Length: 240
Ligand code: F6R
Image (cartoon, rainbow, N blue to C red; front, side):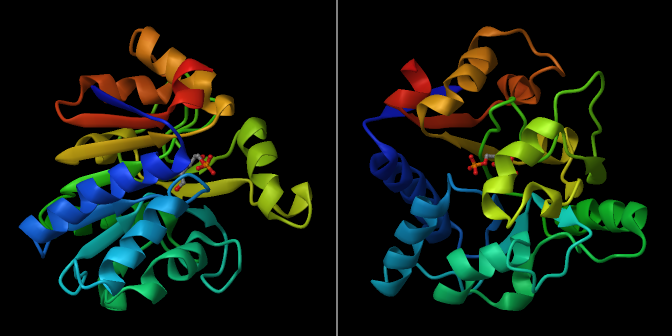
């Protein structure tokens, strides 16, 4: 794992956006794996600015998001589809038909998960996957557990994650208790991964990921078995 420690959130966001911009320039039809949450918002702002400046174009880019609440409508303000439209897709020249987020309303979650992985493979696989990390070491919604699931699947969110995500909802009771998530296997198939982390509240998870052996108790530790991962974090996440 290559580690880039940045002074602050802005530098972390710029470094990550540069890596994506370089890929989009080198391979205009690349496939990106994208994350939601607070962490990548600054990076998305940078990508919007680079697109507006004519430095890059997303015309031929395809995106697959990591996860989506279940059940939730794409028009719900807290759905990850809505988040992506608001924070990135509506502000860049991407073809909306090439942006994929698991369907939070599907009546057949098992088929939806398998179909999502198959679609990623059919698109040529993910060239670059962006990840955030939960305070409990989760990546996407692969929560600490005795066993982890390889493919895209429906999972129950832990109480920790429901607590952490309740800041976006009117009340804790409104937070969906389940979500679609790419599995650890789906994520590890990406050719390159960038894991972003900022703030002291991520320090314990980052320290555990870097120090610990590979364990399902900290799903992010699996990233250490991938050949091309960058951890891009700020000093607070790195040093505490
Ligand atoms: C979001 C996702 C989650 C977040 C993680 C960190 O698509 O998969 O794993 O990356 O919960 O969230 P923030 O960035 O809000 O701290």
